[in-house]
Image (cartoon, rainbow, N blue to C red; front, top):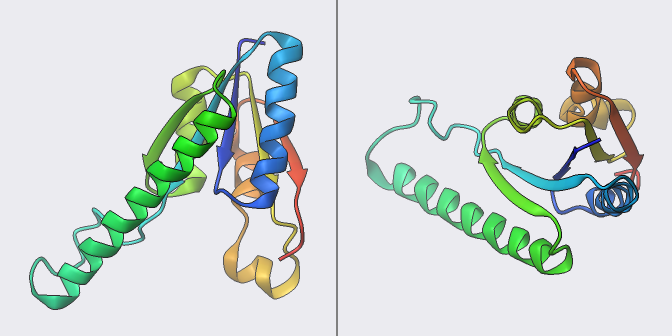
Length: 146
């Protein structure tokens, strides 16, 4: 095993999964890549107005979210200096799979939120999608229900 991808949304569940990824990487001599996917919804979709107050507010929100992503990854980089970090923008479901393919990852280790019922229906599950569509094994680490 040469590469482990560890997606994070900076939640407790993602932190728990990252611990597993780092431990597995150390035991197996595999490189760890920590991935954060920033999902801005309409960013780049071409459907958002290009002018006016709403567009300005949206761009400011996206800039703030990008800054938060960089700060979060900088913290993880300090905590896990042996891992490389990567930030992508887009749909987390597909971006995780694309990153795993591009990096040649042998394993994806990711947290789940443990949502059930209506919360699961409305919010879906990135982890469930990745498990169903990944070409490589996926280890899921269950976090707290939310």
